[in-house]
Length: 297
Image (cartoon, rainbow, N blue to C red):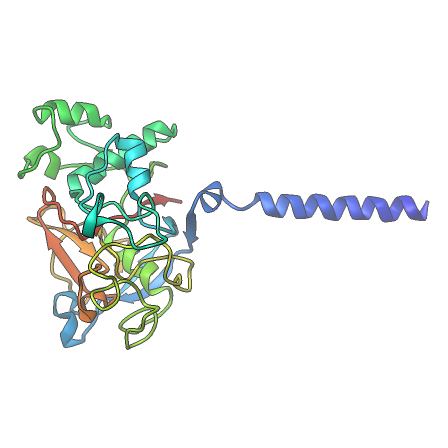
């Protein structure tokens, strides 16, 4: 009888352990990290971060964010072609020992990225986040734009709507990106006030090209390449900050430029700072701008 009781206890504990393992959200097993909601000070009052002033308090609800930048391999699987500049021979080849497909995708506009997000959502049976003129099907958007993703400003594509309750893939908001990048820090970089070789890929160590994702150490929340390698598109239109506290901010309702964050392979040390903001028209592509994915909780 005693042996049976011991076996029953052992079986119960094993079942509890199994349940505990299964509590981890599927996204965490597929390369996403859950970021618990909380408050932080966004922006900076440092003169070097002049586009990120004033520093202000932001409160966010939880979200899932990808550990890695979207790679050339992932982009090609969804979109059928690789637009990246750093894809080919000579100076465009990966560094020795690195994988071409594991380098971040670049030469993608903000318009291109919202197409990717919805296509990936549809492929995985999820509810797409973005819609244009009432449709969540990117094929409709492209047909209405003359058969291709616009390469000049397009009013309909500037008015893309977002369903923030949808379970599909999307870009992080600017606030979500900075919260995730900082990972609880308030210093210039998530590695401290001075850059080191472990901070990320920039002009001092990149060799003048993108590098395979995930080679530098992750930040405290398990996210790679938040500083450097490629800048990252975010959702928001560029707008000036103000000192008031914010809750789940999503930027201005309209604007001329969409924001990108984090610095890149060709950036100087200042442009890798956690608060630094870049911006450009959403139809523009560069070989130093890519992105990572987010899902709402």
